[in-house]
Image (cartoon, rainbow, N blue to C red; front, side, top):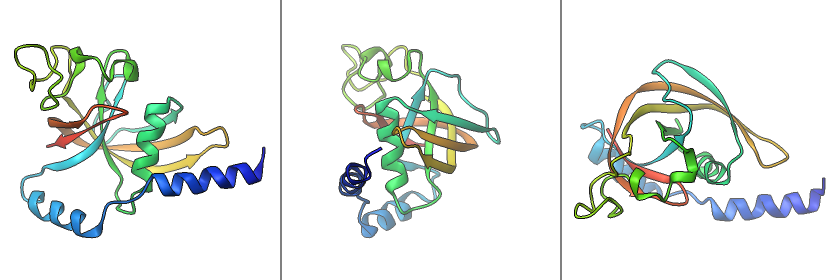
Length: 167
């Protein structure tokens, strides 16, 4: 309800959600375009089951980890905005749980620290954000379209939200 405060929050978000340099984006795209590998993309690990390719869904994003994920994604000037939708029992509550760890993060069970956790689901649907609307209470109304099936090859980040290399 306070326009001055809202403007200050918007300015902080612009500073916090900076984009990658163009040179880094071009280099990564050139290296991986032939293999179908998407490097370091966000992985939305929802409680709800995986969506199917061609399916469209509307999401009410309100959990802080998911709001942060989508704010980071939407801050990128590159379109289409892609992320991987993966089912994870318990949703964001299990992001730091070694049982659900992504491979390559060193969080897996002993003695295989770089392996995936025994409960980790690595298959999902590559999604494209069709539209997003930031709501006054910090929620995001998001419409996403399923593009194809995909699998997490290697995790690159566990917290505050998951990121990984996806094929």
